[in-house]
Length: 196
Image 1 (tube, rainbow, N blue to C red):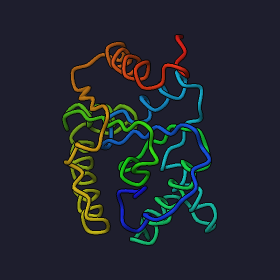
Image 2: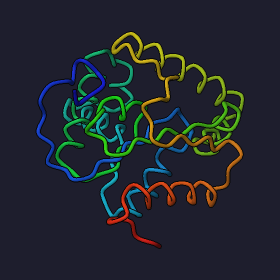
Image 3: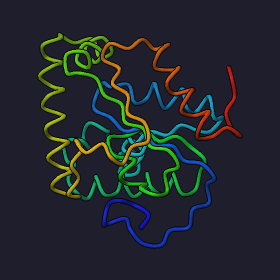
Image 4: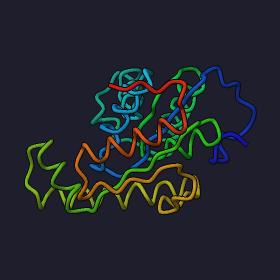
């Protein structure tokens, strides 16, 4: 079957030996976890947002302009390129739906979440904006993303059954989060795992 998304199903040759996908909502810490995994397994870390920026560059526009024009075709292109990266490279990929896009081609699927208040605090700190604005923007972005993925692909992002590891880090320290990740990686990839 390959991908869990119909548009990307079919025969794809996987040249990579190991692909880990990290999905989650805005501000949940996908990038932090993906970075931790990439260091532990000594593989590259890609983000779907990198792909989005590359598409903007290819079109000779800013990523802000691309976001304003974004439609199903842009999402399909981001997800198509994300799948290609996973098929060609040993890597960790973080995105909202990388585990759905890669499907069976992902060797380990992680979902990370935190409650809205905590995610908004993180985003407000990172983007230097008011907490209430961050909360409003984050909630709106989550709703829009969920609507698009349901519309485009029939994905229910609330369905966590496809994941090998689910982390709610609302009240979790980075140290505790890393312990959970390390334990899961040691079990799944003992031959690649490296203590740091």
